[in-house]
Image (cartoon, rainbow, N blue to C red; front, side, top):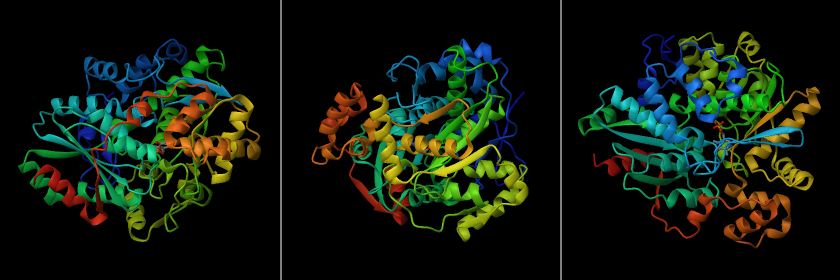
Length: 495
Ligand SMILES: *Cc1c(COP(=O)(O)O)cnc(C)c1O
């Protein structure tokens, strides 16, 4: 059955999957959502015998219904290849009674690669299907990891340009070095004087500027998005939850149909929303455990039904989760409002006006599948230390937030169901915080000395992504204020 995509802020006028991918964000500022969540049409047992690419096809074909089998398989083949340092693509590692789903084996060593290695192919295919002649300009705000993963995916891809805005003082040194050393004549990386929310709001504003869109079209350009607001990112993220379940089943760790819990370190709410969609496809998932860092706006939301961004923005050791406006939550709000675009729109208007909104008791009822909690900086460091001491397994700061919240969840509920923790970044991406958590003695070392030390400690080879930037020259040094973002875009495109 065909799946069409509606805007969360307008009733009616659905578009096809390829059109939704091309546009990224709907013209009315809403996000595209599938008009229904398709059910898995293979049994769990059948899925258990498949590899990552086969499962990716089984999931994505159900959502991207206007892609042919050949088109989709072609995209999957090109995405999940030797760019990943392991053939299984997303290995599961058991440690301290949980299964860490390692989503960081792609080219930029964060989970964003799982979707951004396929998005360029989905986008180019979509452009071809819709006879688009314009050059596609990918406009992206990043809290650190999306930027590099999108740059890696789109660099030198014909018919595209990519512009990345990141918070100048809000990313880790390794994250920044990864971005500013990006090669490719079609790339632009800009540090903004502001935080991630400023970058994201600025980008959304550029997207919904009608006059700019017209001028762009005249000059042969159109925007699209590589942020997790694009369904072309959301859908590939569903696949690894299905894969994790299938793997646990094939290895005899769970019985067919046994419910598992999923813990996701959350920022923009894209990754956990993908897990929610997987559950709604029929994958036996019990609780969706939403883990926040000290920017705990989601924890408060699940606890009180009030989403309130009026608070101090905290810079933490898990910068990719330093977010107060979780864009993808809008997709969940729309759904629990009974797919009512008007209702959702008024809540989102309250969010951009007063910075807060409250959902109704009926809507809160619909959130039973979710559990929210948060971990502070000390708790995060402690769990990194503990896991290393207990089993020699080194996790990054984001994954550590999830692991710490999982401990709280178990203590609070006594629920001992098998649990998958989304491991969203390699510890090599946040080496300093990770090594400091393991031992205070590393303070004086440089980032690359720390990487060498981590390699010795964890007995894991230094990823190519780190080796590459050791000596790479900086090629992007542009900075701007938030209100100059549009001008920067114009200058880059020559309009
Ligand atoms: C982006 C990111 C997150 C947050 O994911 P969302 O989909 O935005 O909730 C968590 N951890 C890491 C390492 C990330 O890069």
